[in-house]
Image 1 (cartoon, rainbow, N blue to C red):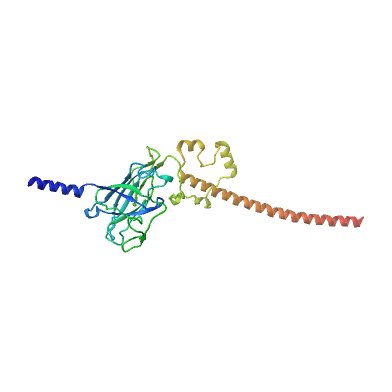
Image 2 (tube, helix red, strand yellow):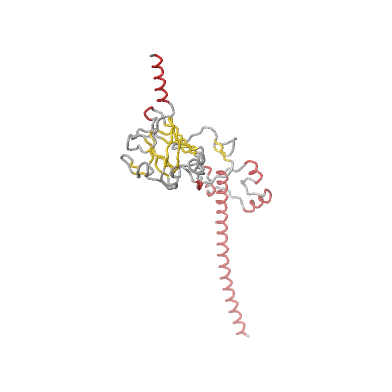
Length: 316
């Protein structure tokens, strides 16, 4: 009896804490992603649910149908309890037309306590295998096994997708929370020497650099600023082969370029150039005025000369 009781306890432990695995098929069209519902089995046990979706053999179901390794760690909000997240990692995959197998995911429990998420998965009678730390009970809405649209309790409706959502990356890890690092981060390098070190090019729409007020060279426009004469600048360039306060090519090759510092230096040079142009404009205006005066004086002299010539002719 004691041995039987021990066996029952062991069996219950295996059922409660063992991994759950199985497979399901998503029918419908191959060019569509259909909603598949998964239960947050770990919610009642106060832990996240860890779901793995896989297709090891790229030829399962059809030649080059696609391979997939995807991990979803999630915890649903279940009517606003909070602490909810979906962290997804979709490994590189192959499918006809170089298309992915997963198009997106969503927590659908903001207005209900059902503890469920939706993952949009490619159809076309494609088989998927899963493993989870708790029961997830996948339910497929592909208009074959279950109809569409899918009705969210106290919410809207969901249907199939024809394109991958922008967040549903297939080449990295997606998480719905911020990431914080206390050490240096290296991209393309194993030896980051700053908070972020990138070996290679950066493609971005905009870069914002926080600057301290004193570093911005508006002091150039103050009355007590000593602006070098153009002759002084010319002499410096002849001797050093670069502008004053601007690092030389050799210095940049050796030490790199401090972007914020260089931008402020270039701004300073633009402001100085503006002062030179203003001064030159004043000189030009002064010269123009002097030329106009000379023209008028010349006209006056010309008129006087003509009169003198006429008088001279009359006298003769």
